[in-house]
Length: 399
Picture 1 (cartoon, helix red, strand yellow):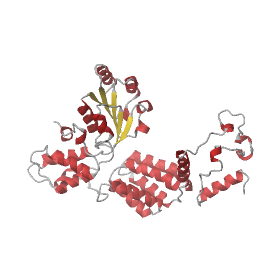
Picture 2 (spheres, helix red, strand yellow):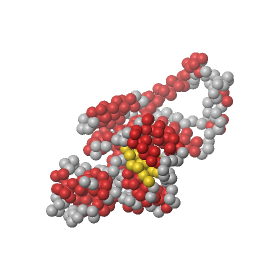
Picture 3 (cartoon, helix red, strand yellow):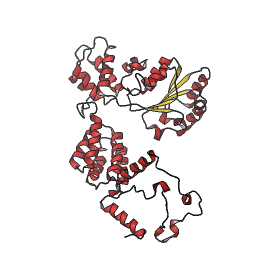
């Protein structure tokens, strides 16, 4: 039986819900369709936000021959057949779901045809392509990041789906409930709607009906679609502000959403952005807590995560690392660079090797002439940075 999510899959880009940064008047994907042109691309984003739908709409509107495959489910022989078929078409699109899990054998047969333009690749992935996808494939594709669907986006999709369900009786409050419960996953929302329709076909579907199907509590981060990101922001600002209780509160809200990936990414940023050199030993301890959380999974993951969040909130803070690298990057963007000094270029005979000198240090210039005297790192007033700065001055014989 064809499920509702597949039955209503859009055949045109204009029918896609959300992704207004890519689809619409004078937006890149829409313009590609108007110009009857398609390039290899990777669509990156969370589950249920439209990656497959966009790929399907693109090939349908352009009328190109397309093959939909899965990097895990389809074996090398399947890919061989698809690539052999591609030889008979001028425009052949290969859509590969979970492309980040494609093994080397499959990549080896894909690359030559991708290189010479015999196939157009549309890769779909929920994992960061800059970390998870073979650089050789990645360099031959444009990468488009899909945005989270808002509650209003999900409700729009649900209302469209209702027109495919004869005589469905569902109120606005129930649609809102499904949208919030879905956490931005359109597929989840449509599946829940379909189950509710066939479970309560002869009565009005309300929140109580939905709760009988899905016992997971509907946890609403906020009263608008930006609430989830507000909670992530609140967690970081509470840790930065050393408020332990607020930090634990916002961690609890994120744990309730069961999104370990977002928690882990944000804690990793906080560790180096807000704590930094004030407590440089925290990084390995955070990694240990993350590994423990991933190993045991939820609900037990809440324990190591809570422990490290408490430690982060109580830790001394410093953003000197962030300020230093951002100031250096700002100089580069303004064109303040200059040439590498001759004596520290590769194999220069004039280079003074610091390990040959007392305290493993010798005075010589490292910055380009254009940046001579430029200072990026400014130590904060905490024990670790004070100690590091003092040792550094002693090494150079300064007072």
